Image 1 (cartoon, rainbow, N blue to C red):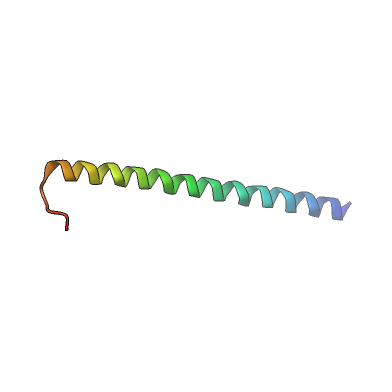
Image 2 (cartoon, rainbow, N blue to C red; image 1 turned 180 degrees about the vertical axis):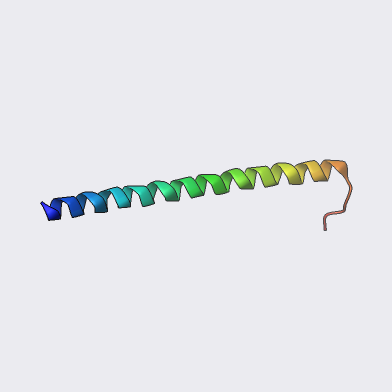
Length: 51
């Protein structure tokens, strides 16, 4: 019985870690897209020269 509980906890922890990786990866992509849009907006204004 203890072994079954331990295996269930391990499985739940593993699934949680796997889903967290996907969440962080997705958030990173979202932040990157926002940064690209900000950069495009800054380029359109011509306020600074990008070298």
